[in-house]
Image (cartoon, rainbow, N blue to C red; front, side, top):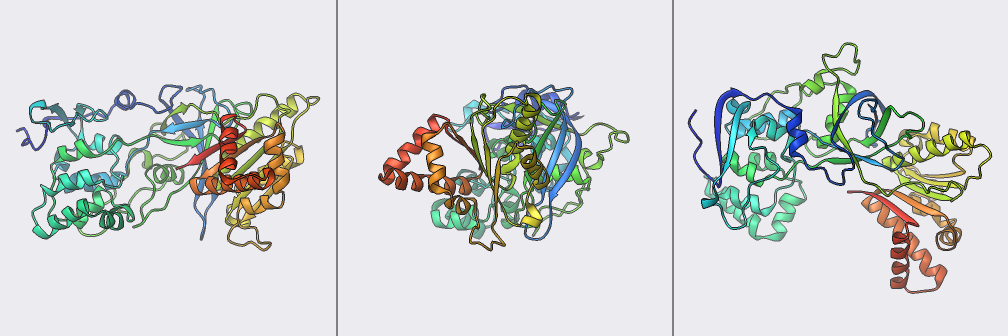
Length: 466
């Protein structure tokens, strides 16, 4: 086959052979942030939908087989999952780039230093030999919001003058870029739909699209209970235009065993009929599967762990799926109490927030059981959508015990753990900073410095979702 024209320092040629996907390539090419293990393929044992319905997020617990990988994990640890892009969206993009017919052929990439622009380098996350279908599925983030650099590069491939002028404005005008691109989460697929005369060469996207990064998920069980099973809990992210989060949408399809037959990309342009991937097509009954469902994952470094001494009291604060690591905490504590009935254990207090007690109070049955066994000393729960006592959020419920909590934080061995969204953890931290300011009769700046010291001493620990 003839070589493609050179549109950048990244040059691609195709061979007639069809590329055979290799999991080893994914393992070799991916660097693993905060990794303390190699990348392993964990078979899916089962899935359990914990919450689903109107006005609540779908929440799923996924059980993974750890018997072969033998990860040594602790409550509070996280795993990194290597996601894959939605197959329908990948097929649409390959067609839009006019490379669908070559999508499975073996390509070879070559970097031409002589024509490279200043500071340009070969994209290290792209295999030099592979297939475009594989690269756009596993290696580049096709959902990332476009930055100005790639929009500027796309101008040269846009025929319509009005469209090109609009793209130039997006690069120059900060407010317009924020309003049209950032606030609408415009990815490459949506951008190309909006600008139909833009026809970039595939090497431009390979050079500019960022790496598809691993997603972290908290382990929500204790290895002391079952060393051969590793569980995670996640909320399925709902995005505009019926889209779902890259990783959570994929994992949801694994659990529900539903084919992906609805096009993700909508609007003008080519519509690609859904094609079930191998993962979607295989059911969770391993007896009738052609092959086990594998989730590529690795263990990440973590400091979000229970104290070694069980006599040390803990205060746990969480909302939504932020409860996940604490379920592992409580399982471990309950098991230790059974193993050492004469040992002294400190109190464990939980503050938990959800939207509705009757819809998305995650792990309520298990938490009630922990209360009965004493693994959990006290639990205070709030619901944000149907509050009757004025307590919408976890920080509202802590107001009733404000001085006691700040005393525990400042003058006792109690360790605090907070797990939740960026907004939630900020609000809880603000509550404790304000409480310290009142309790110590000091300034806001001094209270914030005290909080920084508490974090450094691991007295106040946060696990924040981004």
